[in-house]
Amino acid sequence: MNRTVFDKAPVAGMREVDGTTPMFGFIVEGSGGNDSYFMAVMNPRNLEEGDVSSQCTLLKMGNGGAQNRVIFNQSVYPNHVPGFPSRQAAKSWMATEQYAQLKALMLSLTFS
Image 1 (tube, rainbow, N blue to C red):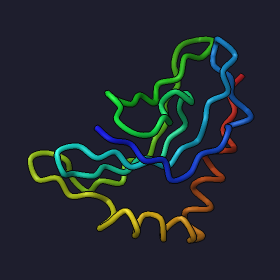
Image 2: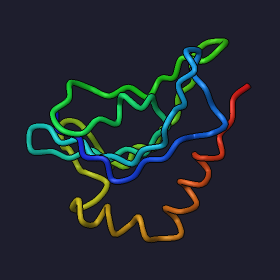
Image 3: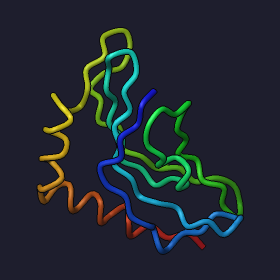
C-alpha cells in the first residue's frame, strides 16, 4: 500500500515502554485503487510515507497495550466506500472545527 500523511503531532502525555513518544496522525492509505482514511495515535514508525507494508495502531504500554483510532471509511469489503470522496476533500476537512476538536481530543490522551 501507499501511505500519505496529512497531519501529525506528538502526543506528549504518552510514552511506550521503550520511551518512544506516540504520534497523532491523519493518514490515507491507498491499495488496489482504493483509499482508506485513518486518524490515530501510533508509533512514529507507522507514519512513514510512501510504499509501506502495513500500519498498526497498537502501542506497547507499561501494563499491556493501548489502541485508538478513527476509521472514516463507510464500508470496506466487498464494496469499498471511502470516508471522503477525494484526498483534497479530506485535506479541506482539516480546516473544520470538527477536525480541530477531534485532533485536540487525541492529543490530550495520557497514560500513566
